[in-house]
Length: 243
Ligand SMILES: [Zn+2]
Image (cartoon, rainbow, N blue to C red; front, side):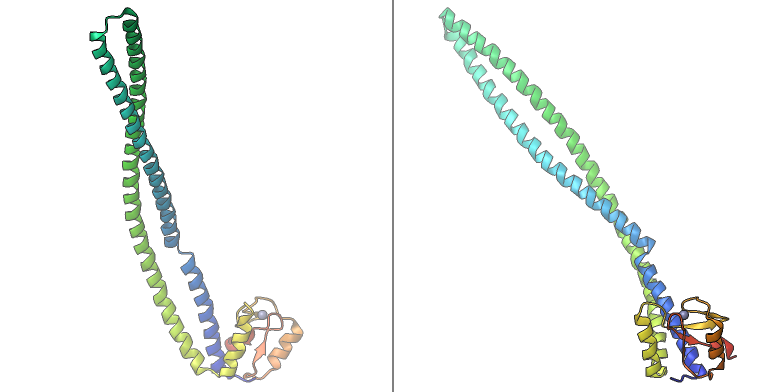
């Protein structure tokens, strides 16, 4: 295959553009703004999980409060009934039984009230935690919106450069011999650069030094001969030699 010096120069520019586009793609997926955004997002999800757990615990405590309150209520009603009975009962045995029952009921009520107080205190603490967690979520959401904005503007900036370079790439490929471009693309499909400049004795694509024999063959070749690196197969561009 033949390609004149101008075409070889254009292909070198294309190879440089592709290297830059690869760097741009890497930068785009490793943006510190993306890491910031994702870190805040993880924190926000964790805070929401904690809030949901608190909510369930609070509902459970509310049920306990209701249960203790209704138990205290029932004991109280029984105490009132017993106290009313105390006024009318004359039998000594019955009196002593009633007094005994009243004492038992009072102990029971006092224990229930203690439990109720404990639950109310726990509920109070949890409500405070809930408020703090909700405030934390608000702050995280504000941070998240800021981080999203920073990420978006970084992405827009990168996209602008990407669009510019891609447009130039389209221009170059349109101007080049399609077979030359196809050869370049086939080589590139292997994963490495499709082309590289000859830099002294080195291939600019793989950075390996080319042996003397091959170099002699390269220098003997016509200027418009399309050469390949014997090491990596990249199209070897001798553009720097042809000034
Ligand atoms: Zn090479």
